[in-house]
Length: 426
Ligand code: EPZ
Image (cartoon, rainbow, N blue to C red):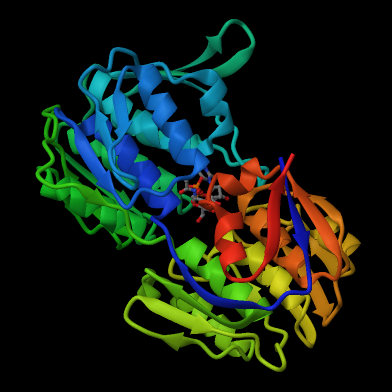
């Protein structure tokens, strides 16, 4: 499957943001902490949700989509602690399942995580955290003799005072969830601040957990000593700030006027500040933001940082925008060591980009982009390519669109509604 895109169109209209991929995946993992089924609302229809649901089913849990955006997960029939190798290797986010699984069953067996091609993405911090809570970790062959992975066992998990040597989003989430069922108090220091973390903590606290400080760099968890939680309300997935930000950047490059609705502007201040620097006027409402392409896009340098800094997941789309800006901009990717996989293809489309090192590129613009056949390396670069293809003169194809469908629901339908000429072809 690939997208066929005819470029040169201006976009106009409204686009509603779906539930956040990086919130819903963790809430699905949290279901393992519960004695009874949980219900999730505002669930996006994306591939990663389907894959994680499959992983839960293989563990023995029951998942079912009730209405269009509702997902019900019943963890009670769980009978295994072994993550399906094929699926877990393709989905880095499967790592968030390991903590709650270990906490619930006292064991978790899983392959080395695969995931995006944006860097080594080790799990050393996860393993150190579980060891600090009393788990024993052995390397294991997890399916036949071929695939390497880990078998983690813990008769009893106890609280710990743990400092992250590197801020890790899923590391914070999975150790927070592990600590919920441990014996005693856990303190997580240098924790990530992403808004998906307090959203998860609020849901767990409403279900009987005792978590304080989520959303700050020090999180304290009083463990239940193994007693499972009981949800008293559904988990409502917060709007996807990365999808919303992607559409704003799209609007800044291509829009007569694009109104992004059902979003939370408070989660997007770093991007809004950079769009203003680039000469893009952002009209901000309670749950919507409207932008349009300015007469002149100004070259603007960005450094990606942990939240609340400029998100690394918007680095590729912003770089695509900077190919249209007047002057020279530097993109400094500080989180991952290999997140410029898209640069060569943008250069083949006519962009002027110099790769200074594995963390920095220099973009000179504006450059008219030409249509090309391109392949998306990861889901965020995939969106940057869609943007570049709509900017380019002529007909482009973007292949490997599974990567885009992983994190953006029905993206072709939604962009067509804005006037883009894009269709999904074999
Ligand atoms: C989460 O990944 C997101 N994924 C990523 O979004 C996002 O890019 C990233 O956070 C940073 O914001 C999900 O939430 C499912 P990290 P995560 O652990 O948690 C190093 C997308 O497009 N590190 O915060 O895997 C790591 O190498 C995805 O939706 C270790 O060294 O990222 C990286 O340099 C892509 N050891 C840095 O920390 C560890 O044990 C931050 O990674 C763990 C991480």
